[in-house]
Length: 400
Image 1: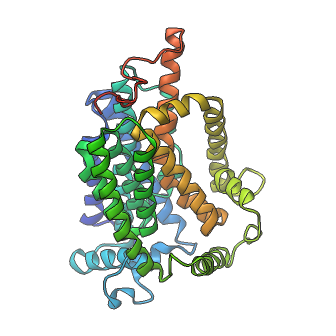
Image 2: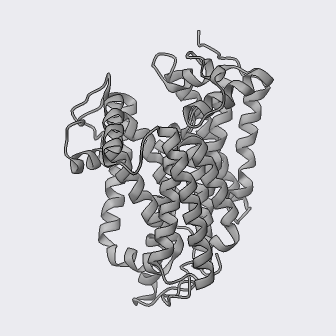
Image 3: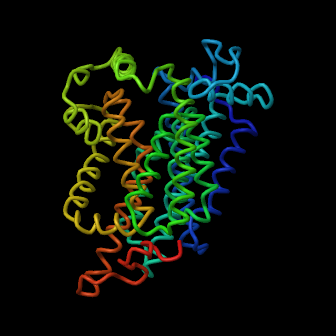
C-alpha cells in the first residue's frame, strides 16, 4: 500500500492549476497548440505520479517537506529548505491533503515553467516571421524537465523562476517586474541562484550595445542594488563570509562532502573539467542501469548533440549574443549555472536534478540559433533574416 495515496480536492486543484498555464503557453491559441499543451500537461502529471511511486521505496527530500520529520516548521520561517517546509506544512494545516496531493500541486509550477519556455521560443519565432521548427518542439519533451520538476520541493518553483527570468529579458523594459518576481522566487528557494541571475543581467547590460543609455543605467543601478541586498541575504542564508576566500572554500568543501555522502564519491577529488563534463553528459549508458538510467542517458545524447550545434554555429551564436540582451542573459545564465553546479557541490544524481534549472536559458539560445540559421539557409545568403537587425540599436526579436 502506498503512503498517502488518496487524491483529494487539493490534488485535483493542482492538476487544474496546470491547465491554466495554457494562457501563457503560446501567443497562438489554435487547436494544434492546445493539443501540444495538453500532451505536455498530461505527461507532467504522469511524471508526478511516477515520482511519487519512485519515492515509496527510495529516500527523497519530498518526505522531509511533507512529513517534516525534523520539526523545521516549529523553528519558524526561513529560506531554502525551511521555506518549502513552511509552505507545505502551512497548506497541510489549512487544507489537509495527502502526500500524493502535494506532488500534483507542486508539479503545476513545473508545467507553468514549461509553458514559459514554449512561449519564449514561440515569441522568438513570431518576431523572426517564421514557424517554430519541429526540432524545438521536440526538445520540449526532454524527460528531465518533466521528472525533476514534478515533485514536492525546490526544483519546480526554481525551474519556473528561471524560465520567467529568461522570458522577461526578451522585453526587459516592459517586463522588468516579472524579472523581479523571478528573482523573488529564487531568493526564497536558492538565494545564490538569485544573485547569479542578477549578475548575469548586469553582465548582459554591460556587454551589449543594444540597450538605450538611460534604460541601461536604470537597469544597472537596479541590478547593483538588488545584488547588494542579495549579497547580504546569501551570507545570512549560507552563514559564510563571501568576502573571505577561506570562508567560501570551507563552505564548498562542506557542500561537496554532503553531496557525496552515501554515494559514489569518485568525483569529489576529480579535476574541475572532469566534474563539468560529468555534470553535462553523465550518466551515459555504461554507468547507470535500469529504466531511469536509460532515459537519463538518452537525454544526455541530446545534450551532446546540442553541444555540437553550439560549437558548429559558434560565430552565429556570438552574433546573436552581441545583438540581443535576452540571448546575452540566457547565455551567461546557463553558463554560470553549469559552472556553479560543477564547482560547488556536484555528484551525478544531484547534477541530474539541479542542472534542469539551466534548461530554459539553454533551450532559448539553441532555438534562436536554429531558427536564424534556417532562415539564412533559405535565403541563400548571410544577410540577417526578417525581424533581426545586426545594428546595435535593434534587439534580436524586434519589438519583444
